[in-house]
Figure 1 (tube, rainbow, N blue to C red):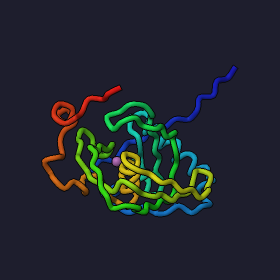
Figure 2: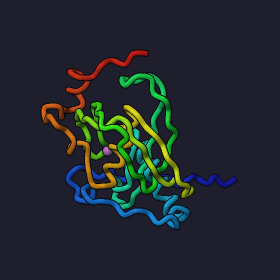
Figure 3: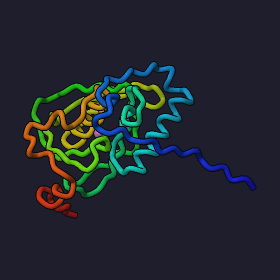
Length: 188
Ligand code: NI
């Protein structure tokens, strides 16, 4: 009996300083969404995200200048309260519309800025329009932590990193110091 192993490719994640992370990405032609190349890219992104252990990844982070991001949020208790889970979802050509300018702050981290956390304030009520992995038009309205996560991921598609939004540079810290001095314990 022949065992066929699924192809799996974990890609290198570009780190802050790589010029590609600072470039705006190219929107995807809807015809590209059905292609083998698209399927391969999204699979590589998912494999890389799972290996690195984050909640989101944008195509430029693995060196592909395409307007694609993936987000996967595990549900359950967290330091941001009880989170509703979001299964791995692919966002093609996403656009964000701010529905309320009211901001809320979270400590953000990024696979492209390893070892650091920064406190960032962003609008807490947004609408997202995007194409799904099957090229269907979709719309989502997001609040709170979810609004922050989506803005962080889609910023990558415009060449922005969370550090660009830090207003108080004292609130950019190493993960270990974050855990020691700033993290609130998770209640369950
Ligand atoms: Ni990031």
